Image (tube, rainbow, N blue to C red):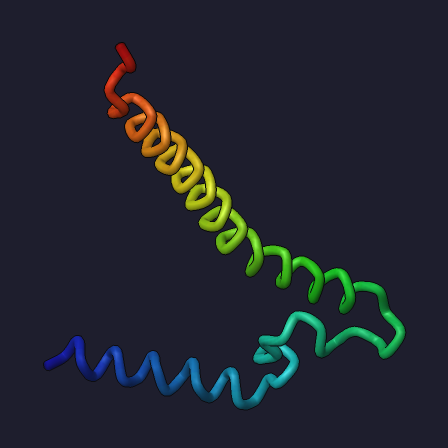
Length: 85
């Protein structure tokens, strides 16, 4: 019970601190930049890069897996042909 009160007080204090200090509560990385600042472009480019890398990795691994599987299937198909006497 006492820890719940302490948690509620800490949460309230943190909320009031954030509400009274909007500069400290600014969570956006590019909101404080000027309109022609290159930092915003760099931030947006890095976010797009971080979003694209997992998809690119999955496509590359899947493509390599598909290529090796098809290659093995073709080898199995060619080896299943009975020899001509």
